[in-house]
Amino acid sequence: MKQGKEVENPESRFFAVLLAAAKLPGVRIHRESYLRSALARHCSEDEIRRAVEETPAAAGITVELLDKVAKDSIRYETAKVSALSAAAGVPGILALPATVPADVAQYVGHMLRIAQKLAYLYSWPDLFSGEGDDVDDATMGVLTLFFGVMFGTQSANVAVGKVAGMMSKQVAKKLPQKALTKGVIYPLVKKSAAYLGVQMTKQSFAKGVSKAIPVVGAVVSGGLTLATYLPMAKRLKKHLAGLPLADPSYEASEGDVVDGEVVEEHETLAPADAEPHDADTTSPKLEEPRP
Image (cartoon, rainbow, N blue to C red; front, top):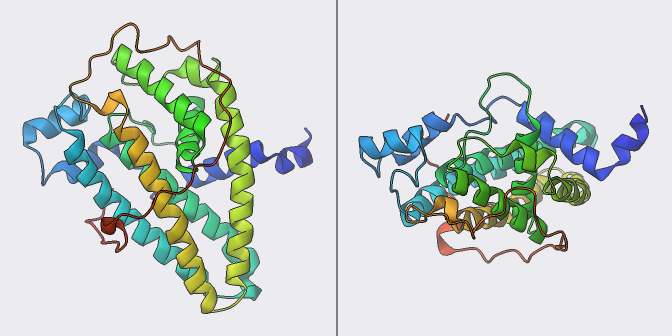
């Protein structure tokens, strides 16, 4: 095995970080528990039951209502990850070898948490069905694409739309394994992973510099996390909310969706500009803890 080269490979680096973060305690969101808790104040018991057994879209829950719930979850996760990042910035330069990897891991872990919450609200299936540490390739693929959307890559936007279209057409309760692991969507997953590996390396360096000065490093680190995490979460919410999969009134037709083996490959990875902060996201407010 050419382990040295694998470590230097941005794609391999990203997958390693993603897998490690997925194994951290508290990162995996229990879909049923989360939907019941998130929808309890807004929906009837029948709507919640159907949302859990099928999807929120199948339960007739409007995208407008889901947007309100999604913003609550984004505020909660943003406040939490920013506070933890600030705390990790306190020790200063002597503790850099210990705090930087931990900070990156918890940051990616919170990206995974909000990605799961938003996915479940907007009618994606359970991403972590098992209780073990293993993460199947299809889940790794779709999470990589979600991260790509969060970082503003056009190819990831296209690929997520294609996957959602397949699921909407088939009324599927599982991710399309073939499309994500063997079909032509897979090269887009690999391309996104390579891009994300490079971006995470840049962010890790920025966080390391910010931690070099005690106390001040805490403020800078927490602020850096807030400035990056919030717009990324909002970007994923906007994209998932705009897909037919999330729309209760949408009915797929034969012309809407490819069969999982045809995806345009001329898209390029290009970072999108961060969306401006809305008024309701500038002052994070904690919601009730979710499982």
